[in-house]
Length: 142
Image (cartoon, rainbow, N blue to C red; front, side, top):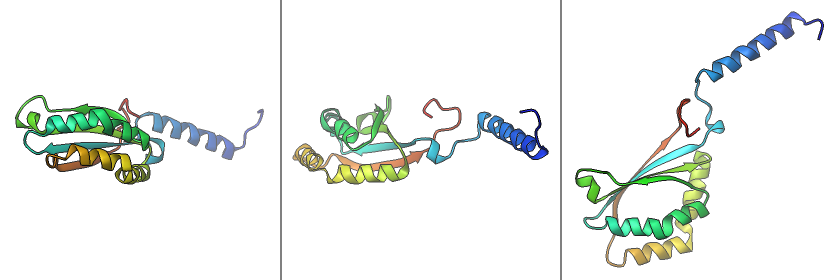
């Protein structure tokens, strides 16, 4: 292009500046990133092995079936929480997708059967905490 109008030059400069600004670490919008959910389950005394078995044998697969990506699962290394706590992270395409996935999971007849069978000798989970998280601009999970 031999000649550029001042307006076109200004638009190109603005676009270049915006691209540089975004590359320097301004967080992406929720539409551009996935949403992560940190969940912590607190178990009845002595029931953590039951919960771990339920997740290992059934829940993880059911999460995937309903569009949730399993990122990782942990138990605290120390303290009394080591005996009764499961911590895990799920990835969702969006908050709306998370809601739809959880609704489908909770209504899944297979899940209802698994939950009922695993709680034949009593309730496993006393409390579940959930926190939705957006990755930072420097996170490898973007």
